[in-house]
Image (cartoon, rainbow, N blue to C red; front, side, top):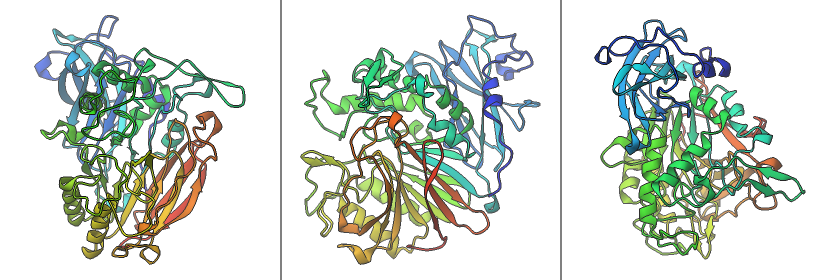
Length: 520
């Protein structure tokens, strides 16, 4: 793989500390601003970029007061001859967050950007610029692709622990210099309050940073917003966001545990029992705190395809919004399934259209691992190793389509189950056989409780080739078992290498896949 020199963490963070008198605003806003001083808009939550392609990207910021968002980009950290972008007015309607789309960027280049926040009534009054960087997707196959993925942040009451250095896993991911980070859901735990201390089994005490919004389950829009802000209190995450663009999907804990549309809660912690009401508030906060291109569309959807040059397309699924109710999942017919008919047809259509060498299916839930929602089923598999039933019928339809359309290079990535593993699915071992072999790789959590490995369902013939998981439930991050995965695609051979890694970056398992195959 070939990657250009990447700026260090120190140089990226320096942008949040240094003000520049030479910065200029778009001519529509007037002349160059004066030096930043107190009483001007501040961007204390950092910056982040998302959904970066070969020629575009989204940049996000949050202000502490009403402000005009301004973005300047440059090929170098010196910001000579910057290109200027006028962003939106940031106000209370979006919790003072905003996103600016950058278009017409050069492919395969390091883009340096800085965000200024200007007083809406006096464009000369700006806060200190905050800088970030990202690399656009290369149009040249030889440059290769590298990305990391994981999920599940601040779950089960394990929040930001300064004594352990906070969310340290982000430093290990950044050290690999990935092109982007794929977060496979559970970016927050809106249903998981954070307390100041938690007693550990060995007698030690876990100490959390706490906030008012994280003291109870999230029900109001303010509380959902506070959950997203909580994670941004971590220095490691803010530094990572300034260096590595993201591709974000959601799962259940952005709203509440194991939710589905139309659900009425029986959880006594909630005064608002209607999940549809909670989900609407959560979706608004989710759209405010992440740079996601499709959330600005009229349909406001999460599922989308991220094209990353000739080597890679990432198909980001949404297994929450369109699913049917959790049930024993053993019905002989299930037209809605976990994706909904419209999303399934979209996925089939986009897979058939893709000309990328590799087609990564980013699934927020695993396929063959049994994920219970006692007495019902939360994911796809229900433990019956026979013919497909319930939500398995939709997956069988998709796998059959991939086989008969001769779609090459499909790989499934997921998180959700709080351990790491690699499953190989093979029709010769399966009850349903009309598909080609494929791999599913599981990673996570980022900073949450770790749990024992889930049981496998034999319908699609999975073989768990590798697994690392604790033997007891809800092991804290202090006890280890925090994981992320790395995918590296070689620009010469086209080989795709998956590495499952621990929190410090140690490689646990490696698998190399060959390009151009329908199944392997």
